[in-house]
Image 1 (cartoon, rainbow, N blue to C red):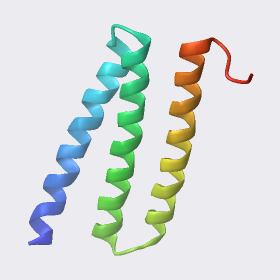
Image 2 (image 1 turned 90 degrees about the horizontal axis):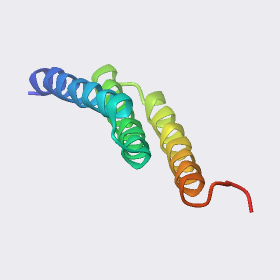
Image 3 (image 1 turned 120 degrees about the vertical axis):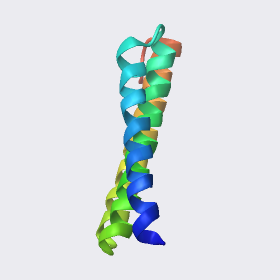
Image 4 (image 1 turned 180 degrees about the horizontal axis):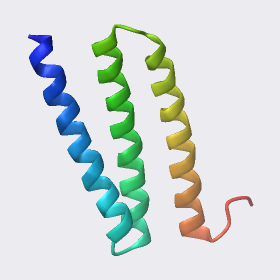
Length: 89
């Protein structure tokens, strides 16, 4: 069953990433671009987890955790810059 589900999941996450990149480039506002970048981080985490399940290697879970932390910090910094115009107070 897993041999059938994993390629389908790879395909669906890849399509979602392509649509996120489209929104990142064409987004009508800066807030839409920040949101699409955050969603792109989440999709890359999902892709790494699926790859880890496919290969049976747990090293990719740590990489996904690092991407999650960096994505959160990046989203907070960009949102704070958008609201105030300055990151540090």
